[in-house]
Length: 179
Image 1 (spheres, rainbow, N blue to C red):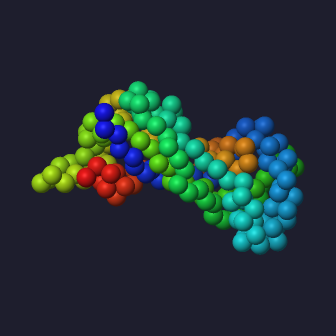
Image 2 (image 1 turned 120 degrees about the vertical axis):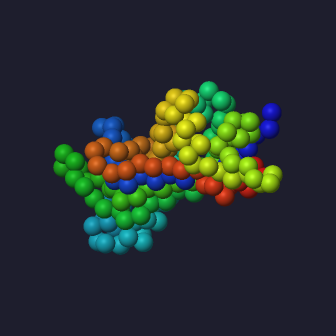
Image 3 (image 1 turned 90 degrees about the vertical axis):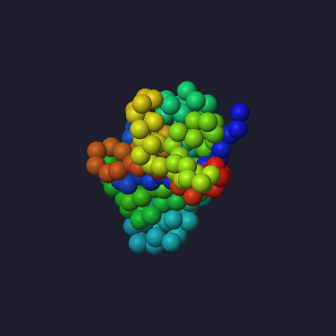
């Protein structure tokens, strides 16, 4: 069976360490004190440098039931970054937060399934977001953003109240791989 690799781009606005253990994990990082100092001083460049050394992301296929059912795989994180670090105190503990966490993920899936998301004209395939969303709805209703995971150290950041969590297929990557 032919398989296609493609990129999905996700972002988390207003992400927060949601588990109590995650807050403890952050405070135990070797760079914690230094990072808090850089953010408080307004030294965004040095703060981002420290954050990027401890930043990671992953795409959880099992959080998107149609992807899991059809044998899609997470291959790699292409890039992950943050913007605008700031501090919020939680129970007297200073926690580094970021206005945006963003990542690009490389996924792989069966060409025959991905074909359902494509329009074809003169042997050229074009990704159709609407067809993809219909396919997701018909096969489980999970949102693509449900697969995105963002980590500072081993602490998971996710939505806790206000903000947005989004993810979309990069049309150019899927069209290039498909054609």
